Amino acid sequence: MCVLKPHTDLCLELFQLGQVAITPGALELVEHSGTNACRLLQRHQSGDFGDLPLGDVDENLRAIKEGCRIMSSYFLTNLDRIWIITEADRSATTILLPNEY
Image (cartoon, rainbow, N blue to C red):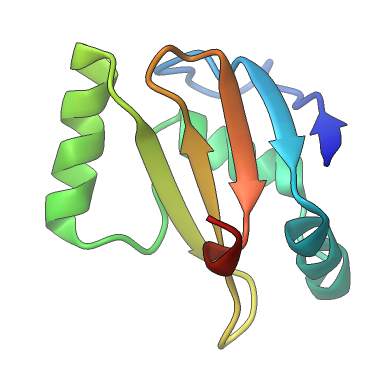
């Protein structure tokens, strides 16, 4: 796992990320697709949860207020997606592939 330090000066921070890590599979996909992982973290932290059903977005908004786990999902290619999960205690955020969960 690789540790990332996102640049967040210009984004709205709805919650703390804690220590940020990325799994090897997610890192490979991010690099292959040319995606900026820090930008995805900014989207996650500012409430743009990506490709989630409306009910899951509502759960994330509740989770921000109540201190529960927050999850985002982003397609990086037509078929490949990554998840970003921030733990309930805000100690850590992990970027991973769904099959790595």
